Image (cartoon, rainbow, N blue to C red):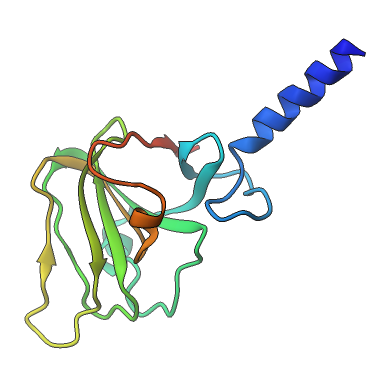
Length: 151
């Protein structure tokens, strides 16, 4: 009986890291970022120069349990603008280990040029874009360590 209990407990703990940020069904396998055992979101990873330039432009929404991740080959100060965006975003710059080095909350869509440019004040290897308000709601601030599962 104890073995069955331990097996069920292990399954429950393993399933905990697959929960999305808002209470709901487990996330499918694939790229994701987690910041606690039960707080994870899916990642859309962009890696081609064209996809990195386009990002979320012209999209109407971003699912609440999803973020877009921009990986860079070398640490630097990657800048983001909100040209052709239709909704505001929180922008999080991460170092190679997944630590948040800079946050720009509630970056609004650009409605007239010149568009504002958002850049970190510390070197970053990744930029994570999520819906506006997401960072504050989930305690994602400078210094917080995230776990990137890019597999």
